[in-house]
Image (cartoon, rainbow, N blue to C red; front, side, top):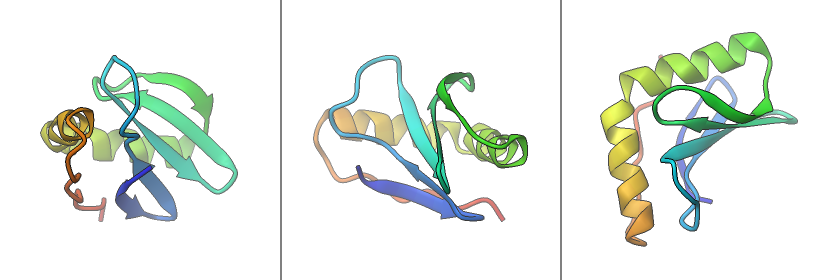
Length: 85
């Protein structure tokens, strides 16, 4: 799965063959979550602090996430998204 961002040891990616609704994946150590671009956690778990960072980042970059989601659906190269600072 192509990585689109990486910050505070959190890896964010979108899978080319994923299903609706539009979502992304995040990994932090042994934890992983699947999060809808609208901001709700669909599956998985992650420490609260790391999850809050991911959700904050996603809110800031919602438009870029949607653009990458549609690029992935069209099997095109994804664009990197600025990490949370």
